[in-house]
Length: 398
Image (cartoon, rainbow, N blue to C red; front, side):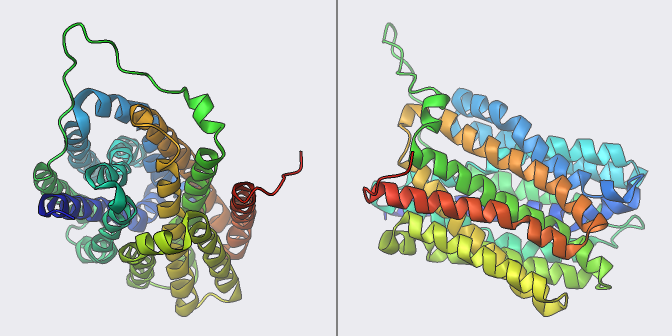
């Protein structure tokens, strides 16, 4: 790996860490701020849902901006949106305006949708032999968010008389720091079309891409893996509050969860090289099932911590594997369409689970919430077994 490549990847990993700092703070506080401001308790996680709905709605805009201005221009635009949306969240907290908070998180979703492409940018900046490791390394940058996010939320929650307003202001500074880091990444310039040159091939339509088994399973693994993780993670601060634990305890559990999400990034690429993409993804499903088992066995700090840690590791295996699998299923000219589709399905699934997490945990309880995660996990496992069997040449029924 060359020195310029290493520099680019480490800067992207740092940007990933700052993105996760933003995301972890949002997860840690948006449900609690929502609970304080919402007209009804079941609406508490609407600001969490707003963030992912905004991401889903932004995927075509992000794809267009990536095609128009390239990686650098689009990523910097996302960071400008991060700064402005954090300012709007702070204003909403100071003015006790629940609907402004929801609107601000929808706008912030554009930044999240942009940031979901950091891992694909890493693969493009790396030599073909290092792509799995590049994706894994950049995702490992999320460890910064694991440590900085919960501590930032906890340390700034009482900075002003309005709870958590200081956290939103701190996120404005995080966005500015990310802009500086992104400015140092050297992306390939978009080629200027020569006068009279034939148009570049448009590639296959999305409907055809989705009919490819590898791409379909990659989308399913990414969307349902993220959905299950979000279902349980978004509800954790609320569930722990119901159990009588303070915010500092919830922040500690989220810290270990995000460590589980991104610490494996230092070796997941090696595992994929050694074991193969599909076995690593299947291992992620198994770890998520163990997480559910632990969560159902008790509601002490140890249960929350162990379950959320394993949930994070399982997500890492599923998501890194899905990204690697997807890279084999589309051509260069199809990347914006394919990556946009993956992100759309991820955000759409997260939108549903964000609302469902608040509704289920406040009306049915933590145990029913965990049981609700079993069907998507079993579906993902079945899809992986089907694709592994197909690749081994085993005839499939029907």
